[in-house]
Image (cartoon, rainbow, N blue to C red):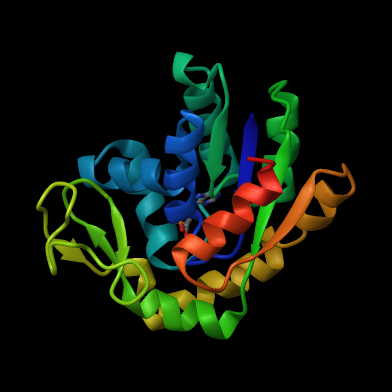
Length: 210
Ligand code: AMP
């Protein structure tokens, strides 16, 4: 099954993608995680992407389209994948269609801007392995260390309050129109994105027919 997990930044896409990915035994492909890894490694793509990311803006379409093309061509995507954070603009969705990839379902996590702002304040990311947590909704079992690898937990630079508002504006302006794009194709399913991680997973599984 080829799935797009759609929703505003901080809606819980990454957390839910990891859970569903384990259940379905298909990889999660997160453009944000790929870009963060490139920034950390200091590759040319990472260096050019960093300024967009830090400002809460989108990295140019041609860069992320290139990333996705390369990633989806890998063997582990042959039996399906979950896209987290891609596509984020209509041209990206059109490019995905142009790659000959058939998307089976787009699950849209619905959550208010107020809830997003509150959630972003509690989000923590492991500096070493990139695992994500939330101080209230999804705390690490190891307290202020990562319970996957023991790494240090940090607030993402782009989760700082002033950047979060920019990211939400960008979402409404550039990404939300994709709902019409996919509902026009008859593959959009909306799921309530507010509640516990377990409640939302159950709603998502129902939407995916799992
Ligand atoms: P995320 O982890 O999905 O919230 O992504 C973090 C940041 O990476 C975003 O705010 C963008 O700057 C960049 N990014 C991730 N995915 C995309 C995409 N599909 N298109 C453009 N920029 C992206």
